[in-house]
Length: 285
Image (cartoon, rainbow, N blue to C red):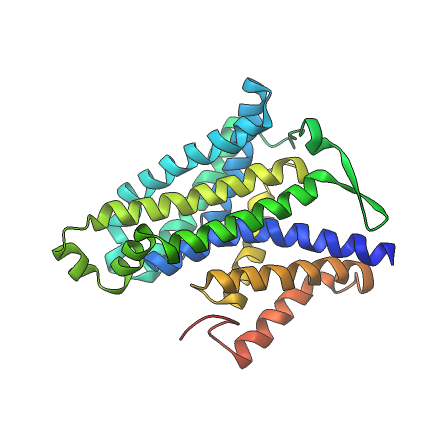
């Protein structure tokens, strides 16, 4: 029973981290119809920036604020200088551009930080442990889960309960009418893309103390993040939540029960979903 509880909590922790990564992908595609293949590279860049900021400030909380803010401005710049030039040409051009951008970011990271693994240590109560259902569990893993829950609720409230959310969704549905009404569509799109990149950077900061910061971390998480988006539905925030929970538990209990094929389970899930519901669990045609 203790093993079941521990692996269940591990699955929830990984689900929270996956959602933090995949939510940015979902928002950018849902709002702008851009498949950002560089998303995982921004996640990696956020982790490396947090390492440098931690050396400068000694405060993990400062990393959580400053690193995503830097990634936001980088994202806005990328959208304005690169994405905007090719977006009107079609989805394939966006995909190829962001695919190449991901490789460029990876080389920049190696040039600045090298290839040796790095780590960031949490401080204070985050470094402690709690007793949950009779077992001792790290506070930081529970913190990741709570942060992911808070961000999910916040995103849903912003997108569906605020004027800003209405404006963002309206620019997707009818950009010409919104432009006629005086809404600055390029600014909206730049902000949305920057926010998606900032979410990726935030996920990278959160992953730093949990995982080793290394140059392969983008590759390791990219496929899992895209599986979450595909299984949940390409533009569904709720689908990203549901898919993250399912995949987190599959990864965790798969490693416990059938470790020989645990890595393949999420791809089997994706194949089944694509066969029976190609739009994803909560996606729309």
